[in-house]
Length: 264
Ligand code: COA
Image 1 (tube, protein in one colour):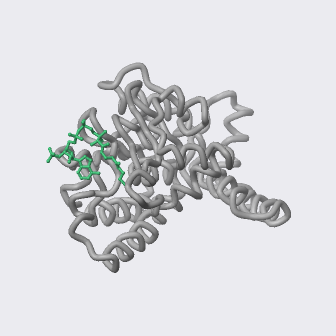
Image 2 (cartoon, helix red, strand yellow):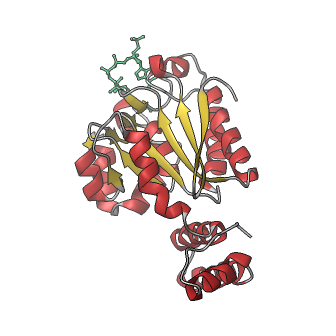
């Protein structure tokens, strides 16, 4: 993997979590082409690797999770190159978006513009107490181009999304938690990743096939009309119905022991 993203595997009793750390601290972990490609590549590998049960995405240092698009790189880009860059967001972030394993953004500092958009691609978001975030693109004469307008509006109300965009609001962690943008705030900044991993442990104890099906079903709820969503739920239930782990859960219940899920 390129040096823009460092990947560490952590083995726990329940399974392996990958910690992806954006490694561009001098540029506030801003998104350049290499980093966007590295995120897509990491997501493709994590999908293939049966050992990986979940992913934490964080940034190096305590200043920024990701300060959005690399504005120094952007300054030298033509309009056509910027269009290509936006296309790269769509193709590469899609692998992260569609990953069948839970992804948690752990915000170690500022997440502005594309930085918050990247966090919004993840399933869940945890932040250190000092983290700040917002879709600040309108201050730069543009709008979000990595899905932010769509994903933020799905998380908060239409009027709140418009407010946050039009004011280029920079929310603190408590404000973001109250709006449902964050799922959890850690006790301290320097224990962010460890606390996030501990917070995620109950997820790891669940059957991987059911976890993947639940993520897909909720995603379907955001995209489909109710009848189509209900059909998608049935189709996804079927995946769990024929799994070995479903039988294991019933056996474990009757034998009064924790289940041993194998993801099959
Ligand atoms: N792209 C490239 N470089 C960036 C950057 C970005 N998005 N954001 C910050 N940097 C660089 C700064 O230019 C500076 O580099 P320099 O030392 O060569 O001058 C360095 O990172 C430190 O930034 P600075 O602003 O001095 O640090 P800070 O701690 O005062 O503030 C931020 C950090 C993230 C709050 C602030 O830099 C910021 O608001 N950045 C822009 C965020 C933004 O609007 N993103 C939307 C992009 S779509």
